Image (cartoon, rainbow, N blue to C red; front, side, top):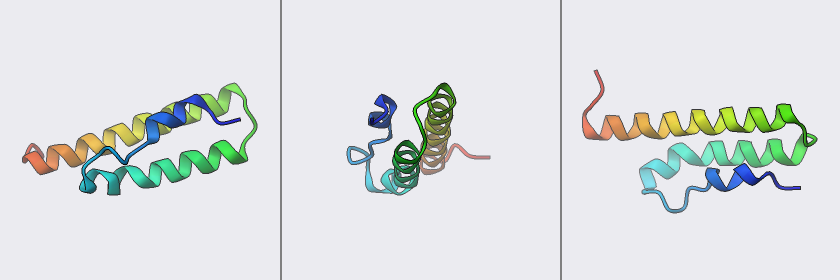
Length: 69
């Protein structure tokens, strides 16, 4: 069964420089979903991975906009 959260790891709609950041998270999430049994811990782990991906994309945006220290 494919976990519903995987749709949030899609990256083709992003600009290329953000696709480069997001792609590894998509690959990892899909691999973990295919490998691990469905359970609450898998759901929690995928949510945390999504949070990490979102943070890294925002960091890349901040860098591009010159908002880094």
